[in-house]
Length: 540
Image (cartoon, rainbow, N blue to C red):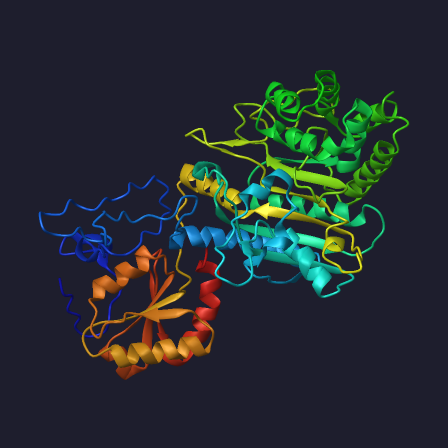
């Protein structure tokens, strides 16, 4: 339906309808993307069967049907989803910048020999690229090993850096749990020789600040020490050549009960059953200073140098995190192992505490308590669970592996799993019915009647020069109601309208989309008017 306007342009729609029809009924754009975040599972559309003698649309040279989908373990992100994703990135970056970190970038693939031998049993998850007669390459598994290569190659002595980029793993994907084969990591690392536990405490503080800013609910930062684990293994009778395989087994306690982990130690790793049972006594422990006091006086550990040194470092970490006011969420947990081979000192992992079937992931400072399998995972309505949302630790020897003179640079860092954080944000949006504005446009310039293209373009140029985000229809003579509907569907807060009489009088009509209230403003005062109005209207 065309809308004819006589005299001055009137953008105010009486009772939001014309001829008894609402705007949406008259000019709904079926091809526009809805501003709300759609989280319902999407069904794959299969190609229709071909008629005899015909090929299916999208069929390949062999005549088999092509089903359009993303590869296993990957996904597309729609504009509303990208809006939420970008806000998560921005909050993480704000924290990184608060700590003086600088940004770097490294290639998405590395020489295969750079990545091999750094990840223990997880090395099998590395994507190898096909040999095409050149260098043997693999897609990066994480951002830590490429960072160590970068530090060694550029002979860097100290740096506080962050890196946000995609990594790739040949894992079994679980989309509802935020586990993909292609996903982003957000890393913060401190490289260089500093006083003991100061960089480590700062990394714990970064975790605390990021998760607090994202407002995802209560969380716990589990902390352990690789030297403490090694001391326990040695005191329990584990042969030194089995330390890393047994550590990898302990690392599975967040997903599997102790009985399954014990079975793996004995049946697959070849550990004596009584040795496994002794390990089981320790991996049940968690707490804070009370746990450290118990370990200091433990008969098996009191003369173990590695264990006692680790206990002193953890005591210092507790002290510094208390001063940094980030210790309330911290829990020392002997079941935390972090299976990657390159860790050498403090390790940590952050887990959300909400929706744990009515249970709290932080069992408090009691020293002897077995963690349940589901503890520290986020459950949704479909039963999908999100594991740790951040993790990291100290890796003092990794840079030396790439340096020709074996020059070591101590490093400690943390990595945030952005896909898992985003999965939780998706659930929050779905449960609360939050509408997401995916367009960043502040002003939509509209015209009434024909022949308003040139005035519309001139107004856009004026607003762009002043740094105001403005757009207009890409049609010569768009329907008036269609322009207004576009503003409402995409959450554009302000509409600036112009007609023949407005051009002659040098004025424009400014309309607030949410309230539909209008103000007539002289064209020369438009920029100043919008600069005062927009900050009060531009919200998510």
